[in-house]
Structures are given as C-alpha cells and as structure tokens.
Length: 314
Image (cartoon, rainbow, N blue to C red; front, side, top):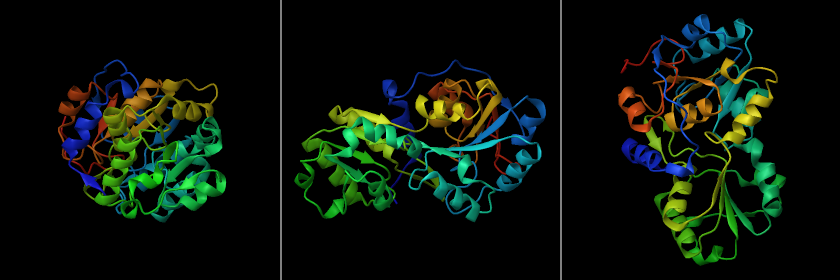
C-alpha cells in the first residue's frame, strides 16, 4: 500500500485547478449530531453514502454506521453507495460492505466501474491500450482488447512504448518501485489515461493512501497527459446516480461524504446537498480551515454518520 502525508494529498487537490469541476457557491455549514439529525429536520428523498471514511476506514467499521443504515431503512428512504472504490464491480463492493456488517445490496452501489463500458468504447474497445488493476482478469474478460500491465517494477519502461494509453483502475498493490516505473513510462511517451477512481487519497487504517487520481493529476501537470476521470467529483457519475431517482429534485438527495474535493465538490456541483463527516479524510483536522482553503463548503457537518465519535472541530 502506497501512502502519503495528508498535507501532500491536500496540496495536490488544491493545485488541481481546472482539472476538477468548478466549485459550487459557498454556504454556511450547520453543525449537526449525525445523519439522523439531518433526516429529522430536512425533507430528504434519498440518502447517498460514500464508503471509505463514512462507513469504514479499511479494516474498521465507523462506529454507528450499521445503525445509521438501519435507521435510513426504517424511515423508508432509498440508499445508494456512491464510491470511488473500483477495485471490484459494484456487486463486489456490496459484498465487502456486507462482510463488515453493513446492510447494502449490489443494486445500491454506483461507481466509476459503471462508466467503463462507455469509456472503453470511446477508445475503440481498448485495442492498443493497457490496463493496470489488482484483479485484471475480470476487466479483460469484459474488455478483451486491453493488454494487462503486470510487474511494473520488474519491467523496462520501454516495454510499454507500443501502448497508446492506459486504463488505471487501482494502484493499491503497488510498491514505490512500481510508482517510479509508471512515472518513467509516462515521461518516455506521454499517453492518455482513463481513471475510474479520481481520488488523490483515501483514509485507510489511519494512513492516507496514494490513489489513481494522484497519478492522473501528476501526469497531466508534468507531461500534459489527457486524463478522463469517471468517478466522483465528475458530473457523469452524478448523472448516473440521479437517473435512479426520476422526478426527484437533486436538492432532495443527500450526499454523506468525508472529502471536500470529491464529495462536497461533486455532490453540490450536481445540485445535491451534502453532509460532511469528520470520521475519514478530515479526522483530526480543523474542518473550517480546510473548507476555507478549498472554497468547498457542505450544508451540514457532523463528527460521524452515527454516534458522535470524533471531536468537533467547527
């Protein structure tokens, strides 16, 4: 697992500029106790949950998360998981959440994997492109024209010169040597990237990981690479989400997330309201400072999705 300092990841987000969607207008956040507090006060038609940082942080389930899901179901509200976890198909994400004791069905998960067929079609079915993934077999079974890029650290960067672009699904399995070789590949011959997970970082077992979004932003900045991001905070994933609720105004959909540059930026830019929880990326941070620095503000902020387990910082 590749990790980075929080400030390194935060600086990457702040420096992304025009590569991210435009920021929504600022609002003044209201401090609430938890998700139930918002649902008690507001006319919400459906609840949209991030996974990492909201429901769990890798090995550990966020205290109160299972009870919060149960409460939403008791209220009769639909649930969707909108996640940048694309290592598995949505069914696999749902299975992982159920193993953690979280009551989520496969048809309730939306991720950048849902948009891969359109993206692969746009590059001619993937012929001449490489795919980097922890579990490439499932990807290649669906898109057989893609070439699997394996064992980067043990490969001469020149070995990949013939490929015209890369589908970068995940890099959780990489070492620092893999990271260095990928940088050399992009420097030798800058080529476009398709990235279903635009996250720069993710809270995982107390660390900040390095995610594909960080590599995409660096390739665009350093080598002028064209990057197509498929997940949060980019509009197409929210179009997919909103299509599940025809006739429901976007402002009646509540996004519960932990990252300003993915969850606030994406959700509020798409017209949803947003509850930012401090159990993930901003754990231990001064939330007001981070909102001010980013210019991204949620309508609501809480310590966590359920029972208040994180010290308030606003």
